[in-house]
Image 1 (cartoon, helix red, strand yellow):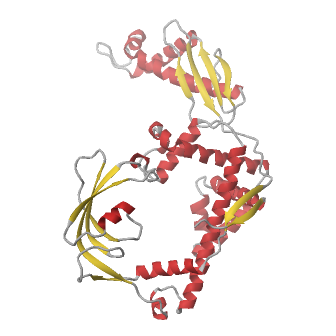
Image 2 (image 1 turned 45 degrees about the vertical axis):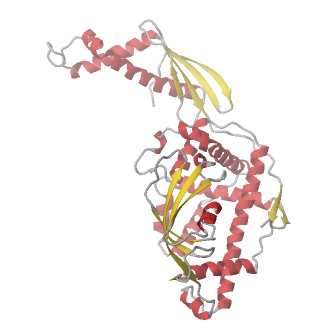
Image 3 (image 1 turned 120 degrees about the vertical axis):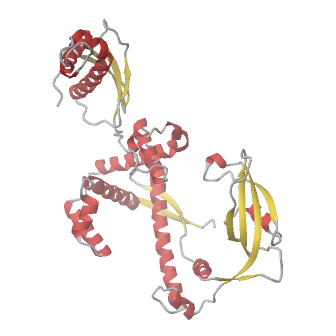
Amino acid sequence: MNEELAGFSHERSDIDEVTTEFSITVPQAEFQKRVETEVIKLQPQVTIKGFRKGKAPANLIKKMHGDRVKAEVRQRLISETLYQTLEKEKIEETVGEPELNLGEFGEDKDFSYTAKVFFPPKPEVTGYDSFKLELENNEVADKDVDTAIDELRASQATFATISDRKNAEKGDVIKGSIKVVLEGEEEPGEAEPLVIKIGDGRLPDELEEGIVGMEVGSTKEIVTKISDEHRDENLRGKEARYIVSIEELQQQILPEVTDDFVKLLGMGIETVLELRLRIREQLEKQKEQEEQTEIHAQILKSLLEKNAFSVPQSMIDNEIRALLVRQGLIDPQRVDVGRIPVQTFREQLGPLAEERVRTTVIVDRIVEQEKIEFSDDEVKQVMQQLSEEHNIPVSEVEKALLSDGRKFGFVREHQQKKALDLLRERAKISRVESKS
């Protein structure tokens, strides 16, 4: 704990519910006293030409090393006075680093600075007694099963060269190469191999239409415009030139759906009927999971609209960093994620990050308001369940999920799940016809 520093003063100004600014002043006499003390501590370590080590006069040391000493004193005083200010104001929980603004320096001036301190939001969440939701019918149709079987057939397909014609048609598999030149670029990059079935939707429609009719051995430049819904905002609406060369046309030969085909899949089943039943079961589970995700999304969207509150920028910035890690743009094993500047990402990722932060705050507050717990016995039950599912000792599961301070996050995650379960139970769902 820091030693109590007498004589300093502070003023508090509450900016909003999550931001407070402190103006802190240390008398000039106290600052100079600290500087003199640090110079005396430094004296035995300093060697100055013309004096034996440790024998240089203090005023000369201060002249040569004064700026560095004063900077260190300022840093220590900020740490001590801000800590003691928070104690005096009975502030126990803050988020992120304070924003500091140092006052003017001078031999005859007090040392002063301002510090903006940020707090985690503590809104009183309302509007979660009941919800009215609309969901599309999620019954698995025969055509859904047929589509899944067709994907399995495609994975087992063979290919034969088309020799009776030279021009590409829809449904052909083309082998060749492709170069891409984006608007603003002068030269195309290296050619990339291209093996794709025309009409499977993996290429832009305009590009596929341009490929249809191309002759084996030919090269063609096809100009398209990138979709306004492209995942990369920087590419939306830009012109793209594709330079496509076709070397070979192939026909995809799909296997017939027979019991022999089913046995080759290695799924532990032997008949077409068993395959259709297995696929239907898998699709039903998948649709159930997607529906739960959609229910949670609609509930949380409703709560975000009903509950407005401020969020510190530091929390949004931390979520931006988490998004960058999730997208593989930052390697947490190689850099200190908390020190990555995120100003350049705020425009692109800020709205999503703020929504995620606000959502988490709302769920955590519901956990607190509803006094939702996740007991040690429940933790043990989950450990045992995971041990049985993955056939590894309970001690190894505990080490992976609960050691090194991870238990708090594990318990919090399951409290959040309980809160979402509670909200889902309060939802009244009406079914509407699927749009697809």
